[in-house]
Length: 264
Image 1 (cartoon, rainbow, N blue to C red):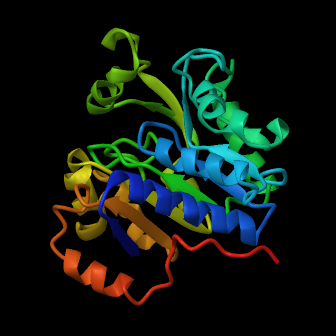
Image 2 (image 1 turned 180 degrees about the horizontal axis):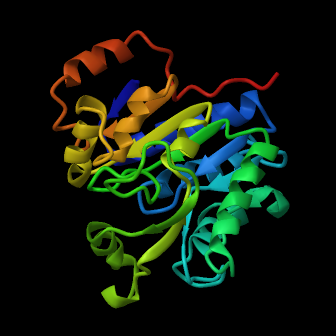
Image 3 (image 1 turned 135 degrees about the vertical axis):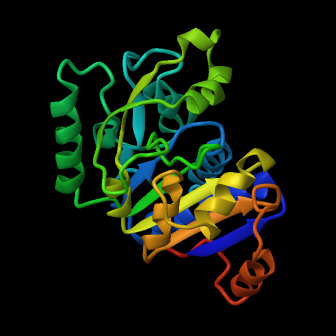
């Protein structure tokens, strides 16, 4: 697991965006797994900036999002579908037909989840999966106790997740209690995983994910099993790590992830 520590949240988001950008530059028909929430916003803003500067072309890119609330339609202000179009897709040249999000309004959610898995396989699998992390260590909506072999499915949200997400809704009672989410097993099949975390409120979860034992109680620990996992942190999110000096030392010998590659 490669651990990259940046001095600020802004710098961490830029680094994550540059890693994604280099994936697209090197492989223009990349399949990207994307995440929602406050953390990746800075990365999406950097991707938009690079696109507008003529440095990044999304016309052949395919995307799959991690999750979606059950009961919220695409035009609902707090749906992840709306989030992605408002904060990224509407500002880049991606083909809407290549954009995929779970269907939170499906009449048969079990079949919709199975179909989502089939679509990922038919697209050739995910080349790079962007992830956030919850304060309890969950990735996507794989709450504590989720199977580390799980697939895309319906999931009941933990009370902590509901509380954390209440800030996006007018009232806490408005937060959906169910979501469709990629499973941990689905995520681990991505060729590369990129976990972005900022803020001291994520420090405990990050310490567990990177330095703790493998456990379903912190589903991000499953990334320890991935052969190509990168974790990008700001100083605050990294502040509880016991081996922080070792990570910085190792990173000093690695290529600069902020350097954009040249297209062939």
